[in-house]
View 1 (tube, helix red, strand yellow):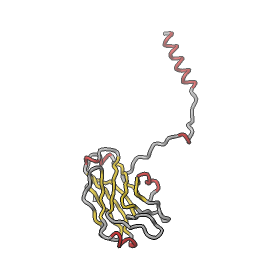
View 2 (cartoon, one colour):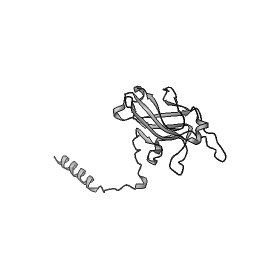
View 3 (cartoon, rainbow, N blue to C red):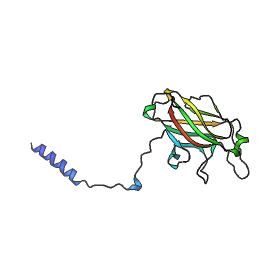
View 4 (cartoon, one colour):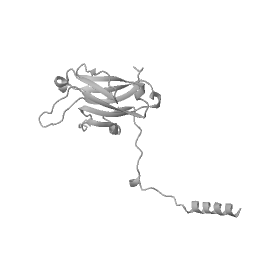
Length: 176
């Protein structure tokens, strides 16, 4: 009995000696935000999912893509292990009509590359790419996009410009 009381006293004393500690915010490591299944290329909060191939935002907030670019999208629980599709909404501006005429876009997820999507011309478009259920088992996917045409560097601008991305979405295959 004495041992039990002694053990209890030690435990109480040890817990009583603990001081509440307030972590130093500058030392706090924040948990990464969960991946979103729909991102806006103009939203600074979604910028972390624009992995590669995006130029800095223009003064109006929109941005150009490069001819190759990569994004990550979250796979929501209701899509895990089910067929889905990627919807990529973008703009082909009038100033790029000649350079981007007949533009084709491919999207690759791992080793899966569905047929290319062909742009009908100037304006806002949504390219759609199917994604098989087998690729949607994890929390997120990485999509590599490739444009077969781009605006070459001109004047003082050394960038190779693609399209103006607006949104990237992962949605169920049967949505319209």
